[in-house]
Image (cartoon, rainbow, N blue to C red):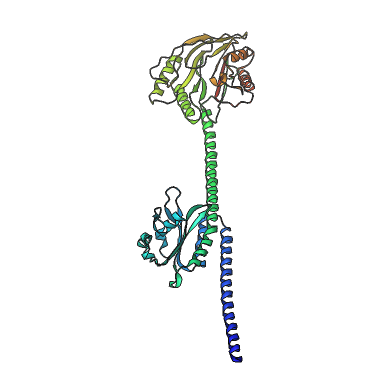
Length: 455
């Protein structure tokens, strides 16, 4: 009896020791898994770059479950197809171009159902797709696939293949891989947001660089445009005082002016307005001024000049047009021959302050239609009289209440300008318009020309 009792006690102690060892091994395994999962979570939070995160996930999956290969397949939000975003293992570079149709293969099944799947005999499973095997020659014995879920939305699947030692995947393996996949979805979403932020920053940098380059090019274009205009005004010894100003609403614009002597007794001047703004208008303006300067001679009337220029412009079927006034001033007699094409009415300001509109026979703008007749008119300036030509950027300037400066207000202003020089008149006119606008932005180009007969 004594010996039997001792034997029973010894057997109980042995069973306890074996059970304790198993429990210790189990707890140690759980602790190791928990530590690994914590390390995975910390590693995923150490970077916001998707490629680095996927590398961490792949390495983590193979660390938790020793396998021959692992892959991440993500869902295309537009087509629902699965594509290999990341894969590890021999010959896996060959699968990166493969796309699985919705529901195709084990991965497609998991992506559709949202439930993890253990397949320990891949070849006999009816859901198995051998497209990857055909492309790579890789033999899949068994595999474990779990979904990657973010806020109820399946982003893709995490898959491990061929458990080492010819062992089978089990429920515990599935639980471990699902724990790996859980923080993965959040990490991928953060990586996606970070990638979008990087792309937005790159786009902003490109846009800023383009904007800076365009601004530089526009400044150069503005300088080129201004080079078409007279750089110096006539000396005080001339029997006339002429001055002009151009203020573009943008860096470059379509308003233009020019004046130059045809001979000792004749001064040519012109002012116009192209139907657009910016670079296209500036180019049309440059062509128009080049044609005017190249064709105008002392034996042409302004109307004849405009007909010739218009015919040249219309040969290329332009999409723009330009209103214009041009004239030839006889410096000894004070007579001005004038012609216009759809432009604002010029004004003569007499020495006593009287303002008279110059009534010219109307015609079409340059470039609007071929074979147009342009008519000549005449006006005479006595000493102290002047003619003022302008674009509609003056009369159509608006204030905050959307009221226009108007021709009537311009005439009222001109009545006060008889004693002024041409430069003083233009400065005062621009200031008068700006005061009227009261801070409202300039919406159109402005050009003004004043020709005063001194004697």
